[in-house]
Image (tube, rainbow, N blue to C red; front, side):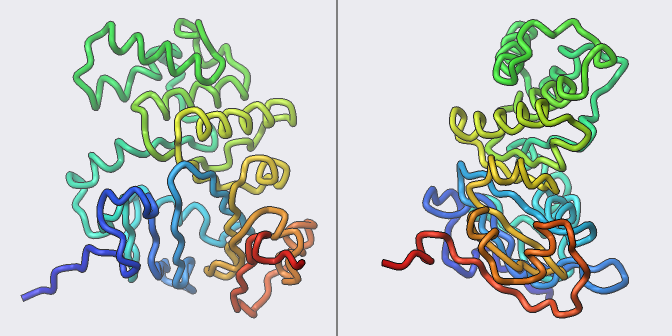
Length: 282
């Protein structure tokens, strides 16, 4: 008889426990036929917090997001959502969990053949039984949140890059998710439009209590939006703390990354950067 997976996190948090993390990765390992992309990664994501995941290309940032939303399964280790183990679930079992997670893709991923309103309405038609009037109300509210009120009838081809990102974010939040995942949200945007996206990420956390998990190379963005920064190096968590504590790290690999002089280091020993409050001396 096959063993039944243990569905309780080893830290004791139970399903629906408001004091526990909304998402937990526990000793997750993943490889694709070569060296591990994730090598024993453990991260807790607290509710209503913005966590930025940073690191050089190929360090496992996007792979981490795919584990969170169930697009990849770990070779070993566990993934939990709201205290429930989810990495062993079927696609059908994953569906109600995914509806609690919004996704903002790097390029926005809008349907150019559909209006702005129809793009945002799409997940409402697919996953809810709301009436047409209720869907219109949801679309209106989502566009107001991202400062695109009245754009329902516009076409994606008529929008700037920043406006497309805003519409994509409206679509990501129209189902009122508890978590939003962002894959390089400011890529391809000028500094002004990038800052607009940063402000929206902050706004969602403050006004809607959304848990934001942001993968980015944008240091300016990370400095502004992050309550917490996770640095991945060599498939491991190399640092975990505030952006300021990251800047004060004595780990040369981290400093190389922050200054744009990162070079791969065979030494993948991890180091945790303590939050500032723990590093202060009297």
